[in-house]
Image 1 (cartoon, rainbow, N blue to C red):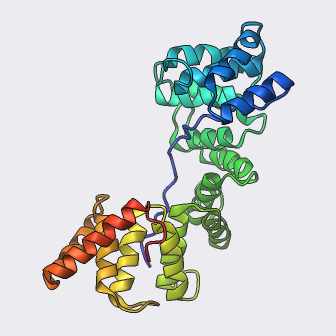
Image 2 (image 1 turned 45 degrees about the vertical axis):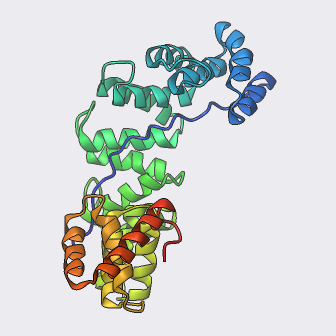
Image 3 (image 1 turned 90 degrees about the vertical axis):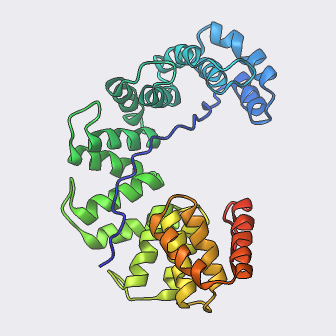
Length: 307
């Protein structure tokens, strides 16, 4: 059986979302923000923020956090997020959790991040639910509790949070915080892959390649490896290169194999580097140059439409 990457995603979401518009000034601010007219954003929202409107406080915080229309200032962003969060703005609560996780403008504090994640999670914020689950899984800011992690993963996954779906699948596969259930794990892994999770796509491809949990199918394997490779996942790029070298479900093509191995090796994949070097020794200088040029072109296209 292949060594699947049944590893929990632990990266904390750091993209700060825009607050929900709830009035005409808020809608105007939202439109200006999407258009990149930050001077207008600040002109509309600042008076409302000074009067205590939570949506406007959130906008001001986001501008300071991103340096939109103002000099970037994390401490000032935290001040405005706190004002908004204390009035119940769930996006502000989630963002404060992210900020305390990352230590931007404040001292890193997992307990404080958990406090804010929980407030947003209890109101249904899927990213907050996911991040709270991760904190329980890792025992950071709270005692480690895999059953509690699964509870929050399920709530987030029910809202189609792809990372939560993937992590939940891992828990079912290994029986952590929930009874081991491989069919359920596979179903969730497949769902995460279809939603675009690159590790899930790689794992599904690996299952088809080896015939684990599914019937062996090289065409399906290469399909999922391609999808994962296009997102820059180095393990998928390596296996895609190997399939080209072996001619599995594709015409044997050592130059294309070399291209994918180079791309994977450039991201630090040691096995890909070993395989690349094997081909290098067997290649002519012209073949090496062609493979390297293809790799550069693929990288310039951000791995999309490279085959």
